[in-house]
Image (tube, rainbow, N blue to C red; front, side):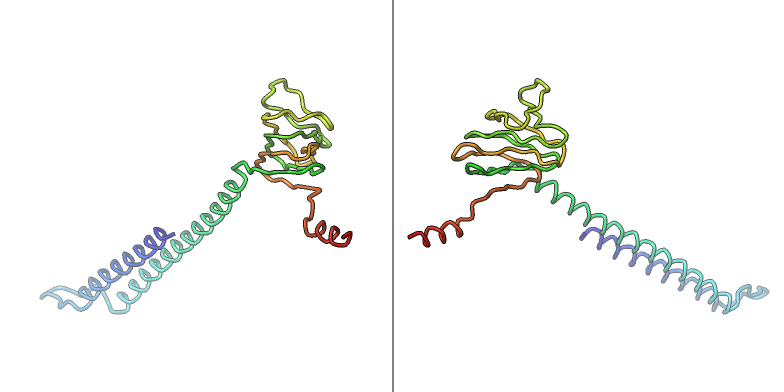
Amino acid sequence: MKRLRNIKKSWAFLAFLILSIVTVHIIQIAYAEPEEGQTILVTQDYVDEKFNEFADANESKILEREELIEKMENELKEMEKELMEVEKYGKFVALELEEGQTLIAGESGEIILRGGKAKAIAGEAGGLSDVTAGSGVDITTDEDVPLNHLLLVSRDDGRGIRVVSSKAWVLVKGPYEIEGMIDETTEDIEEDIED
């Protein structure tokens, strides 16, 4: 961003410098005393007209460059947003899940069961692709999820895993949702009522 501002300032300074030099040169020509026998070929109106044409052309170029710089700044902002999204979903997140909770991964999601036991949840178009097994067969609904196997989710159609042990530790990359989370505040209130 700073570099773009510097470029913008440099162009403005360069345009001002060129405009100043041309102006001085035109004024020298317009007000120069003709030598003996020479005819003046330029009138003040002509000089003013050319000066205004030059100023308009420079102003137009400066505006074009400013628009280009603004467009580049907007594109840079969009690229920064996209990069933040990539960084957000580009790392594995470690989760500790409890029995009965499900982890539903979105499109291009990756799941690794590190500890505990879980069952697969297939989507409408297929199951979880077990990349580690290398067999090319999907893990379908209610099949055991093997430990330390990389599972890929190709579509956003409800694929994921359901925890069947008291706890499970999972690594997940990409968009995901956890369903069946236990609300500790509600549990505490229910225990207080029972007491």
